Image (tube, rainbow over all chains, first blue to last red; front, side, top):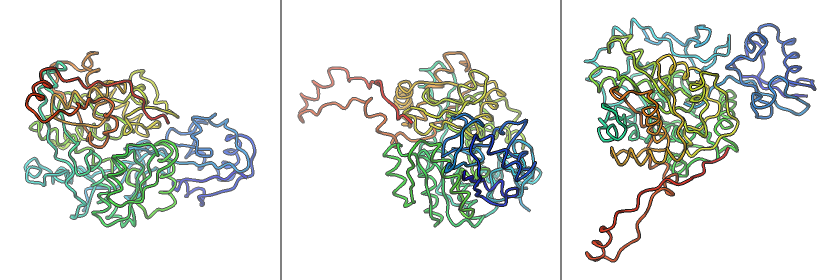
Length: 90
Length: 423
């Protein structure tokens, strides 16, 4: 199981902040699973023209996937994925 | 009726009711404050400001607060120094320095925090918090102490000791995090999400918080007799400060406090961590950095959330971006202190060194009226400088020993090759 933590900004769609997803593969596969479960609204909020929106940060085990392999980053049982809005500093 | 209508998405322009939120639920874009400009216009005037308190709260009509009671330690309304000596050294006819190093906790972060903690009380928050490279930490801890709220401060593990000593004196819970600022910030964001009754000043109440920095534009214009300068130079970390200053000048024009202004805005970042400045120089995207190394801890953010907006504000205003090295930053700290009597931290040194670059490459012209923002105090970051200063050996307490000592020139302070913290 991959543990997925959703930002509260997604709660209107996901109705939960935490979900365990039975997937082995890449982030792409994980998002395919989540899109199927939560529908077009979930996809629209996070993706634009098939790409993650500019202000969406996705972390695998605390590492920003922009510094890994993006949506091709592998995920396996025990991994933690966080989906957060980009806010920082000031 | 309130002059704050609510929040609005900076990306898709969706309207969101006021609250402890920072993200558009439609597109994940960041939110900003939406004012009722008719109400602001009705209320504001130069005369009213002149009668106001000697703090950021003299500009209350342009700040997003409702309550009469402010959490006010005295942030803002700092002196705009006419910097003739530094101007001469750099070849500028009319240079000013806004000295924000003398705020209640010794950095510009008191401005944003005074607004944010006042707002936290309005929202009935049970605690406040932040992710910080050090300056914000002390500002939040001090204002939380004043407001009687607990504070949770997330910091990267390797910041200056002086900043840690200072922040701990105000009694917050500090949470040093393995990793860099971006790691501390991600954790703080997740904690903020899990504790919706806590107001994290630069996370879930960020739209209100950043408004406090607009006062850096207001004060400059007011002290220049309600004229905006030709050019300002601003340090950049997340880019939020630069955006707020740009917004501040624009709003002064909008409400008629200044004539139409064309202030050019330039930014500076240290060479070890310069994602926004590089994007300006290449006219490209802001590429986040995973690792970075610089002595300028307070500007060390690898994934700057306001980076794209800061880049656009600079390019739109026909400004530029400078990327000085750590050695140049240290030299510039000494230069500002020697010429103007202002002792700033490495972020201020970055701005002075950046100004130097921008004059040398012609981005800033010699006859422009230029304002430099010195945003933090040198006393907070003494260890960065200890390797660059020369402490003379003691002498016997005799006039002869004194005469012998001063008959030879003092050894110059020499910025040496230094290593920043690698993250």
